[in-house]
Length: 603
Image (cartoon, rainbow, N blue to C red):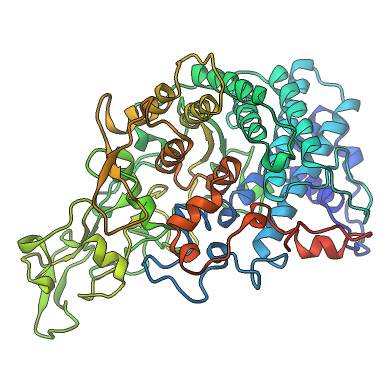
């Protein structure tokens, strides 16, 4: 039998026993003599078990609405200032819909506990297995401890007090006991400290957890505990010092790459001249990535139901305008699920910040010749023709609107393509047939993917050292000292320097939430302006869409303030309040527990 088929058998067997919850099991007829006990009894079997712990994170990061929507920089739909009525539930936080029945919450809960079940098995079964190299065994156990710690970290941030099984589950048990969040943090830090001591600095196989990954997560966990949400985490000022120390270790070991755009799939902005070479996600800055390549360690077709990376498709896009070539790989499909708020768009200096240039697509090109296209809604005689490669639509930067001759012909200008100023994009009223709303969020675009449900193979960077600089800055603002780079602004400016150039003074909207204001302010950090809000602004620019925003805002106590100010659905008719800082426990978990597990306050 091929080895990957054995992985499938073992994983299928394990999933019967290591998922959380208490649902009844069907009587099944055995079709093989292979069992978990018989296979996971030596080094080969345990290696397969540890490998099976990795692919779950493909599906965990697919629960992106829990990390992105309902924040200051992403909303689920509607890029306009008239966001009223029954809008997206994650943005409006209304009691009638934001409750325990939400499918995304159930999926996140189940995926994390399934992962914990696998890692518990890997940790516990290692005790009776002899490896030819004891250091290799210690590393494998540490990989499982890291993945368990990461799963509990997402759980405790999302729900607070949660069940905390630490041994392999082999029989159903309806008795579900919530453990205080402070104890969960203690266990997370124990796992990570032990893992960091035994993990290698360089992985034996690309994609495995390393010492640096444990150090990065230690920094983030200490930083989060230091904020001590609701005085429930056992945090203290010493946590900020620890967070800074661990961040410095990551910064020293994982240098920033020179250019931001090289962290993401290689592509051009024009599909007609699209990059066709190989894609390689390996670089000095990425500390830990969710793998989507074809390596057997995380091959989706082998041991995961998530077939590949589709972050290229879950943000807004406008490729299907006039001159498109049908449903093709040229622009692929954008699902418009995570709309950058108007405020987040105005946090950038469009002329100087390379992240704006990479993240937002400002031009759409004709991919085929078009003759006599009826361009205007109001004038049927106003027709235009496009040759393949001509500009069809152009989004002007928020701080440089077009006027006069630079406008489209439908607005009295000379351009025979759609020219969209910020105001045109916001009001939602098309002037020409090419008006297409907000600009494409292009950050994760991977070229040459089949239209629709085509998936990419580019790895998703979950941890990278640019964030370690910003965690260090945050720790210093909260009172830590002794950092290798000195002041908080020094750490923050290292990230800004890469984006705009050393010494360049980038300007963003002074009031990003007010799209009528054109007043600007520098976002270079100084001793006078460094603050949690400035760091959160920089995290928004640097880490946009990287599965972290809700957790950042919750950690820093800024979720309500910033979301009510910048997310128009929340601002205009949302119900966001303090009880939303914890999510409701999924209804199916409440239903299958005995005695019934208590929900979080307010739900």
